[in-house]
Image (tube, rainbow, N blue to C red; front, side, top):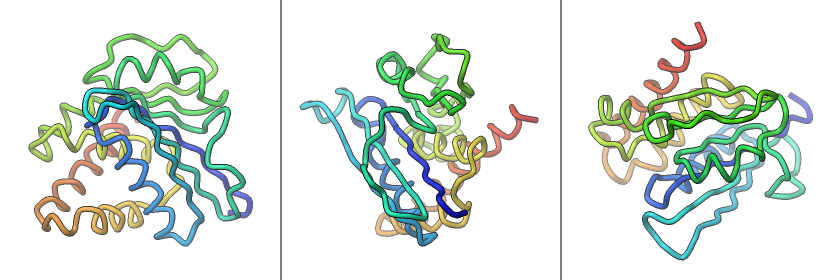
Length: 186
């Protein structure tokens, strides 16, 4: 895996767990002994405003925590799709939260995948708050750059203080996203 660099952008409304999802990816990368950077960006509003973050991970040093184009973009809402569709590198992955976004992207030079993140989170974790983790599972299914065990360890590390029930719900959400995406790829 020499010279591997993965650059991911996650965007959505404040309160959708966008920044937390970026931290989870960075944590999972570090669990694997990779270098990781996480750079948040958000509007002045805490909930309801826009938020995005970039995560880079590599087996080498990371020169800059932000890129002009990304290997993968997760769009959790329509304004994020509108703003960041162009930020996906040609041949890269655009993952769209179909629970909220009904518009089709305009580009044909990228892989586009859909996940009903909010709906799946409600059904497997009992709350739409786990939609970000469902999206993580979906991304992992189409672009497996990290090990499943590292993602689960990051969930344990992140949510462990909230109790094992919360950890387990998030692990179910991760696997629901992976399984739902695997079904669409089959």
